[in-house]
Amino acid sequence: MWTSSPTDRVADPAQGFGSCSSGKQPAWERSHALPLPTPPRTMEEDRAICHERGNSLRWASRAVGLLAAALLCLIPWSTTASAHGSVVDPASRNYGCWLRWGDDFQNPEMAQKDPMCWQAWQDNPNAMWNWNGLYRNGSAGNFPAVIPNGQLCSGGHTESGRYNSLDTPGAWQTTNIGSKFTVKLYDQASHGADYFKVYVSRQGYDPTTQPLKWSDLQLVTTTGKYAPSQNYSIDVSTSGYTGRHVVYTIWQASHMDQTYFLCSDVNFG
Image (tube, rainbow, N blue to C red; front, side, top):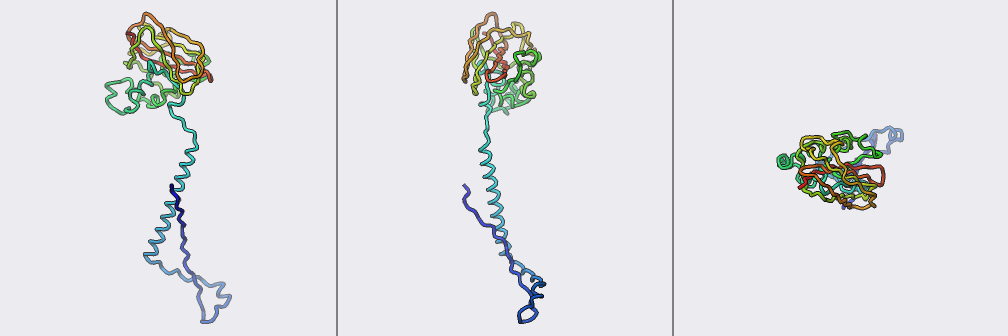
């Protein structure tokens, strides 16, 4: 910690008064007398003054820096992982992209290995950094009225379009599941839930080429209330699904009219 407090010395050049004789200068002359020119400083004196002024500037700069740091410590910061939540299994699209590439998101190999995540990172990296913020407020339960067809995976272009890339049809990486599976959600803020609704895309819908519409979804599970917690599990039982599908989870939080819309890509084996 910076502890020294140097003093900025200000030069005080000596000033004298002219003299008309060897006797005492008359009062009127003293009152009107001009100061004698200051003798020129030596190079050593100039260097000493510059050194002292430099010390003062450095001290002031450090003091300002320390003050700014102290003020920053008073600001309540929140990380992306502390705000809300998402489906973590089967992973929602942006959570999966963050999980696989969050520590290597500039790797050009992603374009070949995981092209849908690549296009999402290129479109807006904040869709992954804020994987837990895909929600809308004030929907009043009338979701088709606020989320048009083709925008289901972005929550109707919520958050000023941050999650638009998640609506893009394509070969998103899938999680293998059976006819009975469990949807697991992570809720860091412990909002609780008034209910969850879990849908599966209809047989014949192709998520690699078709934007998701409400008419493509089939409701398979509706839950009751969940007490506030950080982890929720929803057991789902289905039949007749094979191959690639989208599991669409709607989470109605309890703390306010806040609803999450989460697309997970799966493969029914």
